[in-house]
Each structure stands twice: as structure tokens, then as C-alpha cells.
Image (tube, rainbow, N blue to C red):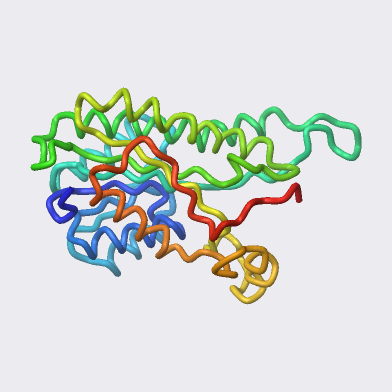
Length: 256
């Protein structure tokens, strides 16, 4: 895919991984829609990057809201890239807590709704928009990159809800790619390890000491720019399809 000839929608585009992706795709010539709920950060990022980058307030769980972001993107250039990088947290809990009480069902539903249902909502609507494109020289019409997590494979104690949701993203990847093969839309997923983003709400030195030291090599946390670089490569490399790529420095989570 020629990234400079398409538009992209990045959900969670005002956050850590999303912001880096917005900057990278814009640097490679794409028109980019920052799809997020953080108006202040989203508008500030759009102003900072400039060019064909715009912010559209977007709720990934609302069909009309997502359609609005997609419409903004197609108004700039044919939609060629959709990146699901939205996030959030509702806490961690054991299936049965130390007090003998069962985990919150509402919390479990919250994670599945945001990470799995929200991802599928964006995927299905983006794919339909891409299917209407004129194929590029490769025959492809677009690519969707979802964000899983290595917790989908080695979830830690207290991560049942998060791991189940991210595991669903992993399971979605191949069948969605097969579904969309006829219309020339690829589906990929990235499973990051521990990446330093503003969500940590601490200095990087403190975060590195706590989480970076456990990474085999490089012995540090990942940087959002490394995630963004992989998104750009996936977009450009038309033979990548239906796969989940771990981006984790060979980290494997321990039980806790």
C-alpha cells in the first residue's frame, strides 16, 4: 500500500500508542483522523501535527460516532488504514477476592465491551468503507490493525477481564482476514508488551525500574514510536495478513 495516497482513522489517537501512530502515518503522507474522546488532547495534537490531520470526537461503541470519523477520513482521501489503539482501565480483580467475594461482572463486561466489541465495531464499519475503494496496484483496498496484548497469551493474576477481551481480539484476527479477503481488506493485530505511555502517570525512570527490568532484550519498556513503526510497516507490506505480531522484547508475563 502507498500510505501517502490514503487516509487513516486511529481510535485512541490522542493517547500514547495512538498519538505516535498519528504522527508516523502523517509523516508518511497519510491524511489522518484522530478518533478519541479527549477533546483537549485530540485538538492539540491535530494542531501540532498540522497538514491533513484532524480530530473527530469518537465513541468506538457508537455506530454513528464511528461513521462520523470514517466520513471525515474519506472526505480527505480514500480510507486505507484503520488502527484500533483505544484503551482504558477499570481496575484489576481476582475471580474470587481475598474477602471471598466474586469478581464484578460489570467490570468484566466493561473490558469486553471496550476492547473487543469496540474493536469489532470499528473493524466492520471501516471494512465496509474500504470495500468501496478502487483497488491499489497490489489489488488491496485497505488494512485494519487491531491492538491485542501479550496478556492475551499470559494473563497475570487479576487480569481475567482484560486478558479475555484481548484474547478475543487475537481470535478475531484470522477469521476477519479470511472474511475480508474477497474485498481486498487485510486484518492484522499487534500484541504489545509493556510500553511506556502517559497512562502510567509516573516518571519513566520509575516505570522502567518496575517493568522494564523484566524484559529480556532490549531491557527496557517499549516506546510508542516502535508500535507506530510496526503499524506503518504493516500498512506498507501487503503480504502481512491474518497474523498477530508480538512486540515485546521477548517478554513473557509471569503469574504476577
